[in-house]
Image 1 (tube, helix red, strand yellow):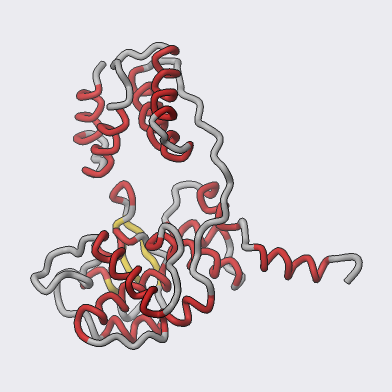
Image 2 (cartoon, helix red, strand yellow):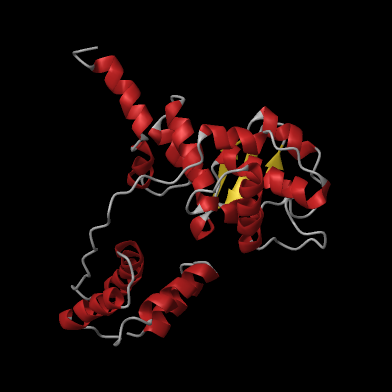
Length: 264
Protein backbone atom coordinates (compact mmCIF):
# COMPACT_ATOMS: atom_id res chain seq x y z
CA UNK A 1 0.00 0.00 0.00
CA UNK A 2 1.33 3.44 -0.88
CA UNK A 3 0.26 7.06 -1.09
CA UNK A 4 0.81 6.98 -4.86
CA UNK A 5 -1.48 3.97 -5.34
CA UNK A 6 -4.18 5.50 -3.12
CA UNK A 7 -4.10 8.75 -5.11
CA UNK A 8 -4.07 6.84 -8.41
CA UNK A 9 -7.20 4.90 -7.46
CA UNK A 10 -8.94 8.03 -6.20
CA UNK A 11 -8.10 9.79 -9.46
CA UNK A 12 -9.08 7.09 -11.95
CA UNK A 13 -11.62 4.95 -10.07
CA UNK A 14 -13.37 7.49 -7.84
CA UNK A 15 -12.90 10.37 -10.30
CA UNK A 16 -12.06 12.99 -7.66
CA UNK A 17 -11.14 16.51 -8.75
CA UNK A 18 -7.56 17.79 -9.20
CA UNK A 19 -8.12 19.98 -6.12
CA UNK A 20 -8.90 16.88 -4.05
CA UNK A 21 -5.80 15.12 -5.38
CA UNK A 22 -3.68 18.09 -4.32
CA UNK A 23 -5.37 18.05 -0.89
CA UNK A 24 -4.36 14.42 -0.43
CA UNK A 25 -0.76 15.14 -1.47
CA UNK A 26 -0.43 18.10 0.89
CA UNK A 27 -1.96 16.13 3.76
CA UNK A 28 0.28 13.06 3.27
CA UNK A 29 3.34 15.32 3.30
CA UNK A 30 2.81 15.64 7.07
CA UNK A 31 2.90 11.85 7.53
CA UNK A 32 6.42 10.41 7.62
CA UNK A 33 5.57 6.85 6.64
CA UNK A 34 3.14 5.03 4.38
CA UNK A 35 2.56 2.36 7.08
CA UNK A 36 2.05 4.50 10.18
CA UNK A 37 1.91 3.14 13.71
CA UNK A 38 -0.13 4.69 16.48
CA UNK A 39 2.98 6.62 17.55
CA UNK A 40 3.51 7.88 13.98
CA UNK A 41 -0.06 9.19 13.88
CA UNK A 42 0.37 11.01 17.17
CA UNK A 43 3.60 12.54 15.86
CA UNK A 44 1.73 13.56 12.68
CA UNK A 45 -0.70 15.66 14.74
CA UNK A 46 1.98 16.98 17.12
CA UNK A 47 4.14 18.28 14.27
CA UNK A 48 1.22 20.14 12.73
CA UNK A 49 0.37 21.74 16.07
CA UNK A 50 4.02 22.66 16.71
CA UNK A 51 4.13 24.37 13.32
CA UNK A 52 1.19 26.52 14.37
CA UNK A 53 -1.68 24.90 12.48
CA UNK A 54 -5.06 25.57 14.06
CA UNK A 55 -7.44 22.77 15.02
CA UNK A 56 -9.56 23.35 11.91
CA UNK A 57 -6.55 23.06 9.59
CA UNK A 58 -5.32 19.95 11.42
CA UNK A 59 -8.73 18.29 11.12
CA UNK A 60 -8.66 18.99 7.41
CA UNK A 61 -5.42 16.98 7.10
CA UNK A 62 -6.68 14.32 9.52
CA UNK A 63 -9.68 13.60 7.29
CA UNK A 64 -7.37 12.83 4.36
CA UNK A 65 -5.14 10.57 6.45
CA UNK A 66 -8.12 8.70 7.91
CA UNK A 67 -9.40 8.06 4.39
CA UNK A 68 -5.99 6.58 3.53
CA UNK A 69 -5.94 4.42 6.68
CA UNK A 70 -9.39 3.04 5.88
CA UNK A 71 -8.27 2.27 2.32
CA UNK A 72 -5.23 0.34 3.60
CA UNK A 73 -7.42 -1.72 5.94
CA UNK A 74 -5.66 -0.38 9.01
CA UNK A 75 -7.74 -0.39 12.22
CA UNK A 76 -6.02 2.83 13.29
CA UNK A 77 -7.70 6.23 13.04
CA UNK A 78 -6.63 9.73 14.02
CA UNK A 79 -9.02 11.44 16.43
CA UNK A 80 -10.12 14.89 15.34
CA UNK A 81 -9.22 17.87 17.48
CA UNK A 82 -11.87 19.87 19.26
CA UNK A 83 -12.56 23.02 17.28
CA UNK A 84 -13.65 26.30 18.88
CA UNK A 85 -17.25 27.22 18.07
CA UNK A 86 -17.21 30.69 16.54
CA UNK A 87 -19.98 32.82 15.10
CA UNK A 88 -19.78 32.59 11.32
CA UNK A 89 -18.72 35.86 9.66
CA UNK A 90 -21.52 37.51 7.68
CA UNK A 91 -22.38 40.80 6.03
CA UNK A 92 -24.81 42.93 8.03
CA UNK A 93 -28.17 43.89 6.53
CA UNK A 94 -26.90 47.46 6.13
CA UNK A 95 -23.83 46.25 4.27
CA UNK A 96 -25.92 44.01 2.01
CA UNK A 97 -28.15 46.98 1.18
CA UNK A 98 -25.11 49.08 0.30
CA UNK A 99 -23.75 46.35 -1.98
CA UNK A 100 -27.09 45.81 -3.73
CA UNK A 101 -27.71 49.53 -4.25
CA UNK A 102 -24.22 50.10 -5.62
CA UNK A 103 -24.24 51.62 -9.13
CA UNK A 104 -21.37 50.07 -11.10
CA UNK A 105 -19.73 51.79 -14.05
CA UNK A 106 -17.85 50.04 -16.82
CA UNK A 107 -17.39 46.38 -17.73
CA UNK A 108 -15.27 45.31 -14.76
CA UNK A 109 -17.44 46.97 -12.11
CA UNK A 110 -20.63 45.56 -13.66
CA UNK A 111 -19.13 42.06 -13.76
CA UNK A 112 -18.07 42.29 -10.12
CA UNK A 113 -21.50 43.65 -9.15
CA UNK A 114 -23.23 40.72 -10.84
CA UNK A 115 -20.92 38.22 -9.11
CA UNK A 116 -21.80 39.79 -5.73
CA UNK A 117 -25.54 39.65 -6.53
CA UNK A 118 -25.26 36.00 -7.56
CA UNK A 119 -23.39 35.05 -4.39
CA UNK A 120 -25.96 36.84 -2.21
CA UNK A 121 -28.97 35.46 -4.07
CA UNK A 122 -27.96 31.80 -4.42
CA UNK A 123 -25.55 30.93 -1.62
CA UNK A 124 -23.22 29.27 -4.13
CA UNK A 125 -19.52 28.85 -3.52
CA UNK A 126 -17.29 31.30 -5.38
CA UNK A 127 -15.81 28.43 -7.44
CA UNK A 128 -19.32 27.37 -8.49
CA UNK A 129 -20.23 30.90 -9.57
CA UNK A 130 -17.02 31.53 -11.51
CA UNK A 131 -17.46 28.19 -13.31
CA UNK A 132 -20.98 28.99 -14.53
CA UNK A 133 -21.50 28.79 -18.28
CA UNK A 134 -24.34 30.42 -20.19
CA UNK A 135 -26.00 27.05 -20.81
CA UNK A 136 -26.10 26.50 -17.03
CA UNK A 137 -28.50 29.43 -16.59
CA UNK A 138 -32.18 28.56 -17.03
CA UNK A 139 -33.84 31.97 -17.21
CA UNK A 140 -37.30 30.52 -17.78
CA UNK A 141 -37.35 28.29 -14.70
CA UNK A 142 -35.02 30.48 -12.59
CA UNK A 143 -32.48 27.71 -11.99
CA UNK A 144 -28.69 27.49 -12.12
CA UNK A 145 -26.93 24.19 -12.76
CA UNK A 146 -23.75 24.35 -10.71
CA UNK A 147 -20.84 21.96 -10.39
CA UNK A 148 -20.15 21.54 -6.67
CA UNK A 149 -17.56 19.70 -4.64
CA UNK A 150 -16.75 16.22 -5.83
CA UNK A 151 -18.01 17.13 -9.33
CA UNK A 152 -21.60 16.84 -8.08
CA UNK A 153 -24.11 18.86 -10.06
CA UNK A 154 -27.16 20.41 -8.45
CA UNK A 155 -29.93 22.84 -9.32
CA UNK A 156 -29.99 26.13 -7.43
CA UNK A 157 -32.94 28.55 -7.65
CA UNK A 158 -32.47 32.28 -8.16
CA UNK A 159 -34.77 35.29 -7.95
CA UNK A 160 -36.61 37.34 -10.57
CA UNK A 161 -34.45 40.28 -9.51
CA UNK A 162 -31.24 38.43 -10.32
CA UNK A 163 -32.72 37.33 -13.65
CA UNK A 164 -33.11 41.00 -14.65
CA UNK A 165 -29.37 41.48 -14.23
CA UNK A 166 -28.36 38.14 -15.78
CA UNK A 167 -30.44 38.81 -18.91
CA UNK A 168 -28.27 41.82 -19.70
CA UNK A 169 -24.99 39.93 -19.36
CA UNK A 170 -25.44 36.50 -20.95
CA UNK A 171 -23.59 36.15 -24.24
CA UNK A 172 -21.64 32.90 -24.64
CA UNK A 173 -19.11 30.80 -22.79
CA UNK A 174 -18.53 31.64 -19.14
CA UNK A 175 -21.07 33.93 -17.48
CA UNK A 176 -18.35 35.76 -15.54
CA UNK A 177 -15.35 35.14 -17.78
CA UNK A 178 -12.63 37.56 -18.73
CA UNK A 179 -12.84 39.56 -21.95
CA UNK A 180 -10.87 36.71 -23.56
CA UNK A 181 -13.28 34.04 -22.31
CA UNK A 182 -11.09 32.60 -19.57
CA UNK A 183 -12.17 31.87 -16.00
CA UNK A 184 -11.61 34.60 -13.44
CA UNK A 185 -9.11 33.99 -10.64
CA UNK A 186 -10.91 33.88 -7.29
CA UNK A 187 -8.04 35.85 -5.71
CA UNK A 188 -8.69 38.69 -8.14
CA UNK A 189 -12.39 38.62 -7.22
CA UNK A 190 -11.51 38.63 -3.51
CA UNK A 191 -9.26 41.65 -3.98
CA UNK A 192 -11.92 43.53 -5.93
CA UNK A 193 -14.71 42.71 -3.45
CA UNK A 194 -12.57 43.99 -0.57
CA UNK A 195 -11.83 47.18 -2.49
CA UNK A 196 -15.54 47.63 -3.22
CA UNK A 197 -16.39 47.26 0.46
CA UNK A 198 -13.78 49.86 1.34
CA UNK A 199 -15.19 52.27 -1.26
CA UNK A 200 -18.65 51.79 0.19
CA UNK A 201 -17.31 52.67 3.63
CA UNK A 202 -17.07 49.42 5.58
CA UNK A 203 -14.55 46.69 6.35
CA UNK A 204 -15.39 43.33 4.75
CA UNK A 205 -15.99 40.39 7.10
CA UNK A 206 -13.42 37.63 7.55
CA UNK A 207 -13.43 34.92 4.87
CA UNK A 208 -15.03 37.55 2.67
CA UNK A 209 -16.13 35.48 -0.33
CA UNK A 210 -17.44 32.62 1.81
CA UNK A 211 -19.22 35.16 4.01
CA UNK A 212 -21.69 35.70 1.17
CA UNK A 213 -22.64 32.04 1.56
CA UNK A 214 -22.96 32.43 5.34
CA UNK A 215 -25.09 35.55 4.87
CA UNK A 216 -27.38 33.79 2.41
CA UNK A 217 -27.86 30.81 4.75
CA UNK A 218 -28.56 32.97 7.79
CA UNK A 219 -31.09 35.07 5.90
CA UNK A 220 -32.70 31.90 4.50
CA UNK A 221 -33.34 30.58 8.00
CA UNK A 222 -34.44 33.97 9.34
CA UNK A 223 -37.08 34.18 6.62
CA UNK A 224 -38.50 30.79 7.56
CA UNK A 225 -36.62 28.46 5.22
CA UNK A 226 -36.04 24.92 6.50
CA UNK A 227 -32.64 23.45 7.28
CA UNK A 228 -33.49 20.50 5.00
CA UNK A 229 -34.11 22.73 1.97
CA UNK A 230 -31.03 24.79 2.82
CA UNK A 231 -28.94 21.62 2.75
CA UNK A 232 -30.06 20.94 -0.84
CA UNK A 233 -29.45 24.51 -1.97
CA UNK A 234 -25.97 24.66 -0.44
CA UNK A 235 -25.02 21.21 -1.71
CA UNK A 236 -24.01 19.82 1.68
CA UNK A 237 -23.58 16.05 1.84
CA UNK A 238 -24.87 15.88 5.42
CA UNK A 239 -27.39 17.82 7.45
CA UNK A 240 -24.79 18.28 10.18
CA UNK A 241 -22.80 20.60 7.89
CA UNK A 242 -25.89 22.77 7.46
CA UNK A 243 -26.80 22.88 11.15
CA UNK A 244 -23.92 25.26 11.87
CA UNK A 245 -25.93 27.97 10.11
CA UNK A 246 -28.73 27.44 12.62
CA UNK A 247 -26.50 29.03 15.27
CA UNK A 248 -28.20 32.38 14.77
CA UNK A 249 -26.75 35.74 15.60
CA UNK A 250 -27.14 37.37 19.00
CA UNK A 251 -29.92 39.68 17.85
CA UNK A 252 -32.01 36.69 16.73
CA UNK A 253 -31.66 35.09 20.13
CA UNK A 254 -32.55 38.38 21.82
CA UNK A 255 -35.70 38.75 19.72
CA UNK A 256 -36.85 35.24 20.62
CA UNK A 257 -36.11 35.79 24.29
CA UNK A 258 -38.32 38.88 24.39
CA UNK A 259 -41.23 36.77 23.15
CA UNK A 260 -40.74 33.84 25.53
CA UNK A 261 -39.49 35.55 28.67
CA UNK A 262 -41.69 35.05 31.75
CA UNK A 263 -41.00 38.66 32.69
CA UNK A 264 -41.98 40.18 29.35
